[in-house]
Length: 268
Figure 1 (spheres, rainbow, N blue to C red):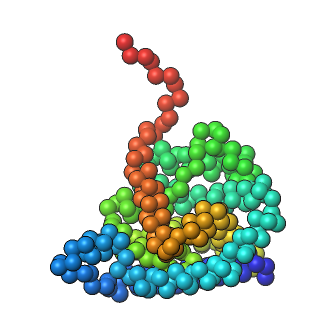
Figure 2: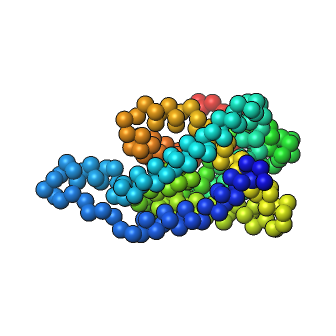
Figure 3: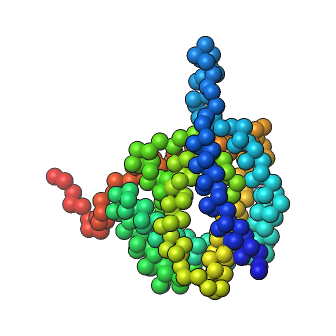
């Protein structure tokens, strides 16, 4: 069993446990907020929205240990041994394989133009792009966008709940953690037939996704946490800002279903 297959097995086996653990922490109850006699402390408590901070910090340290011993060294070795051109091809293939999940969420988010872009990207890149290795669709006017069921729940009005930090999954909240579980169920490859070849491909995919994701975070995340006085709080703040910007971008996307390929007549 190679490193990608081993990582893939670990990731696949841990997914369900991590999701259940996250939901369990969310349902376990929150810490008591400061009394009304401490308005500044109460305001800070509500702003951070992290009543499970002691447990979250423990999970953050566990994740940091796993990253230090396993993920970061693998990501460093991957970027050193594999040329940038090939790493881009791997990233493109992995993104293309996730297209059915994106499409399902685009539809549930009632974003027909985004759904059309996802479908066209999958068809073009899977064929002309040689199985997704080359992002031909982007140059043809179908740019990439991300989508997940956590975003879908947010657009449906589901609140995020308290902040959660879980090993492997990283920063999140009950809404996004449960959404991650739904995305696993939406992935057709989750239900692929068994057999040694099928399992090997699945493990290799999950392992490659984990290493590819960590390699992509090598510069920005490492620099932000190394310079931070409190890396945990920095990661929490960066996650929330980035996550809210993603949700706002989806909500603001009100493009028409069909692009206006024709020239708009000038008004008189």
